Length: 250
Image (cartoon, rainbow, N blue to C red; front, side, top):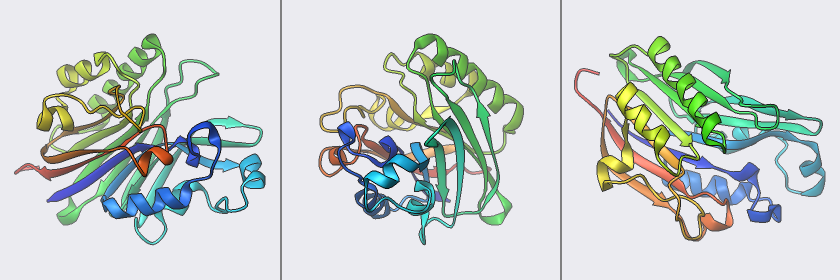
């Protein structure tokens, strides 16, 4: 079985400096890539202020708006809640999502973070575990969150079931990435194909390696950074995609 997966920090559906609502452009670009499973961060579930400010703000939550008629199933993990709305991570899937759970791994009240864990049903009864993350800005908080992520994988993901962990790791020194490889046996898609994690930030001219796609039980066939125009008009992060193939016996 071959899959195309994509991860993207969508900046709450707004362009850099929050000048424009870019949900229509984002939806078109995501559909053009044709991913089977999409991992999204900074997804706006609701925002009353933006709905009043932008005349074309979607009535549905952003994950529903993006998934409509293409990805048959979706899950949303609400992390940050405030008076005018909430945002978090989301997973869109062409396959049925059998279960989903959002684990709170926030370092403090001003920076809410979560691990959105979905179990997806593939063909022939196979199960795929998907975890979407957006880690903290500080090294200390990221270290705790990686520890929670590793603990969750070890306790809830059987060794014989495939796994994808993707998102915005804010891990420019690759300290978190090394732990995931050593302690959990994960492989990073771009390191497998190109020798290094992808440069994904800022999207106009990527310099920092913040976004990642980790897998277990898959071979990586192709990995690509989607940056420059039109992506730099959509978010400050580039999107990453990877074509992966399930290893025999998984």
